[in-house]
Amino acid sequence: MTSHTLREPAESLPPNAEARVLRSDIRFVEFFGLPGIGKTTASGLLADSLRRCGPLLGDVRMAREPRSFARRQAYRIGIVAPRFRNAEFRSLFGRIARFVIESGQASVADIIRVIWNLSVLVAYIENERTRTNSIVIMDQGLLQGFWSIFLKSKHRKTSEKWQDILSAIGVHDMVFVHLRGGIDVARDRLLARGDRSSRIQRATPDTNDDLWSSADRACREMAADLGREMRTQDQAGVMAAVEVDRLSSPEDVAERALEAVLLACLDSHRLSDLADRRV
Image (cartoon, rainbow, N blue to C red):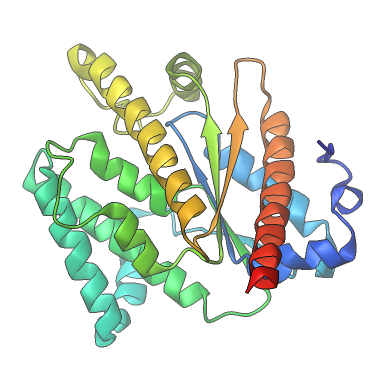
């Protein structure tokens, strides 16, 4: 496997003909994994690395929201409200709501929160697709949104399947980077952050272990389900996996993510070419 270094991103890219695959086909790179595993740090470093490639990849941006609660909600309302004029968005919103309600969340507040958060993500992605020549790096994307639903769900069987909703949103222009690490690694890194930004950090001590187990199981099951889906469907996005252990520095993780993203995109492109030749 070719090694791609963070310090020399331009040299680490494949030849121009192959690099164009990433530029032209991919609009979103989304990180997914346990809280504390390093999604935010790795996504920022990956964005910096890709930006240094210059015009080859176009405009590389991080998905950012205003920091204060009031400004963040005003921003979210501003991108969601106009979308309700679109029948397809209204249909997606209804399917998300039905899926969340049937999943059996812990409280009405949880139901409202996860429906709203996922709907905001869908509206954001639809807005970004109107731009040209850009790649958006997301540390909290669609998979993390569905994961937050599964974290405290009481029922896994619902009339709406999360993979079908994901397909309706459209993932043909997305790369999902799964940061795979054990509970012990994620928990220690989360504790070292010293904040309470994750739902797991706000859990009571007697339920914490169960919540971590549920979180890890949901991550692994979702990654496996999505991997199977992508192997059986055309234009189903790209999945890349990066192993994270105790000795992995943020730079190590970002370097592996860069390599995984590029190689996964190239593999997907080659498979697509093979399929086209068979037709």
